[in-house]
Amino acid sequence: MTAPAPADLDVVIVDGYVDEPAHFGVPPYISTYPRYVAGALVYAGVPERAITYHTIDEIRETRALRGDVADADLFVYVGGMTVPGKYVGGTPAEPDEVRDLAWTAEGTSLMGGPVRFGVGDENEGATDTERRDLDYDFVAKGDVEAAAYDLVTNGLDGFSDRMRDVGEVTQWARDGAFVVEQHPCHPDYLIAELETSRGCAYRCSFCTEPLYGDPDFRPPPSVVGEVDALSDAGVGHFRLGRQADILAYGGDGERPNPDALRTLYGGIREVAPDLQTLHLDNMNPVTIVDYPDLSREGIEVIAEHNTPGDTAAFGLESADPVVQEQNNLLVSAEECLEAVRVVNEVGGWRPSDDRLPKLLPGINLVHGLEGERPETYEHNRSFLHSLLEEDLLVRRINIRQVMAFAGTEMSDTGADIAKAHKKQFKSYKREIRETVDNPMLQRVAPPGTVLPDVHLEYHEDGTTFGRQLGTYPLLVGIPGERPLGETVDVAVVDHGYRSVTGVPYPLDLNAASMRELRAIPGIGKSRAGDIVVGRPYGSVGDVEAGADVDLARFATVSAPSAGD
Image (tube, rainbow, N blue to C red):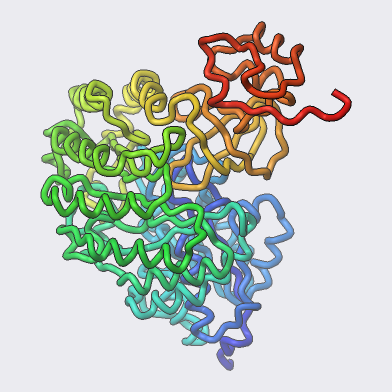
C-alpha cells in the first residue's frame, strides 16, 4: 500500500489541555501543544487548509464536530493535566472522553502532551495516575509535535519517541501560529501560553518538570519570533507559562540572567507593542534566596515590561521542615517569606492608585506529600498568617492535594497520604479561604480598584460573572444580568474568598440600577433610592450620597437628554 503524501492528508487536532484550575478554561486559553503540532505538520508538508483545530469543549457542545474526527486521515489528541482543582470556563477531558474520541477516529490516531505522564480516573487531587494508551494507535512518550512530524514523514507508519530540539520548536512555533484563528475565542478573548524553557535543576518529589531533564532554554529570538507570528495572527494576550523558574531564564538553570530577561521582554514588547496582557507563571523562591541582587534586577525587568496583575507562583509546597526534607523541597518557610518580601518591594508597585500591583507572588501549597502529619497544617497556617501580620501581599494562595505521577518519587507513595488526610484537608482549606484569602484580597484589590477589560462569561442568580485575561485572573461578579460576550471595565466594591464584586466603571449615576448603586461601599438601599429619585444629575458633586461615601471613585454622570 502506498504511503499517503503529506500534502494529501486531512488532519484534526483536538485540544483537551488546561494548565491551571479556576483561572483558564477551554476556552479562552491555548497552550503550546496544538500550535506546535500544527507547525510540525505544516513543516512536514501538510497544507494549513487541511489542518482543523477544535477544543474539547467544542466537541462536547457540538456533537456534529465528531464527524471531523471520524473523517480525518490523522487525528491528534493533545491533553492531560498536572494541576488538580476546580476548573472554571472549561474542564479538561476525562479519560473516558479521550478514549471515546479514539474509537470515533477512523483514520490514524495519535495522543500526546502531558497525558504521557499518566491519567487518573478523574481530574482531581489525591489521585494515583498511570500511563494508558486509551485505545490510540500511537501514544507520544516524547514530544507530541515531534511524533506528529515523524509520523507524517514516515507515511503514518510510526515514529521514535524523541524530544524536539530548539531549531525545530523555533520553526514549528511560527509555522503553527495560524491555528489560533480556529480557536472559538479568537481574537478578542484568547491568551496564548509561551514556553521559554523546560526541565529543572532541582528534583522535588512530586513534580513532573524534572522528567524533561536539566533546564533547556529557548533563546530570546525563538520566543520573540513566536510572539511576532501570534501577534500577526491576532493574539494580544500572552503568558510566559512553560518554565520552572522565569528568573533562571537564559542562565545555567539556577543563577539569574537579567540581561537575557531584558532581551526577552524587550523583544516581545518590540514585536507586539499593542499587546494587552504580558504575564508569567513560575518563579522559584530559592533563586531569590541564593542570588538576591541578581534576582532583584530580574524582577525589576519583569515589572517594567509586564502588565498589571501579574503573578509569580512560588512553590513553597510545605512550611513543615519534616515534609521539606523528605521531599527535596527547596526553601524553608522563612526563606520563602524573604522571597515574598523581595517581590513585594521590587515588583509590587501600582502603575496608579486604582490599579492592581504590577507583580506579586503566589503561594503554592501541596498536601499529601511524604512526611505529612497533623503539625504540617499548623506550620502552613502559621506561614500564611505571617503574610498578613507583615502586611505583605500575595496575589493568590493555591492549596491542593498531590497527584502522584509515574516517574516521580511520589509514585512510590502514591496518593495514600492525601486520601487519608482528605477530611482534615477540606476543613483546613475552608479555614484558610476565610481567614487569609479574604483579608488578603481586600489588600490586593481594595474598593475602587479598576479591572480593565473584564470579559462577561456567564449568569448565576441574577449576577453576571466575568474575568480578565491573565495569570490567575480574579473572578468578578457584577450585579444584574448583562449581555454575555461583552467586555467592560469594572471597579471593585466587595470581596469574597477568591473573587470580587464590582460595578461597571465608571458607573453612570443617571442610568445605574438600584443593585449597582447599593453595591457601592457606604450606599445602602435608602441612599440608592434617593439617588434614583434625584435624577438626572449634572455632575457627581450634585449627588447627596453622604460624607462617608467616596462616590467620585466609582462613578460619573452622563449628560441629561434634552427632555430631562
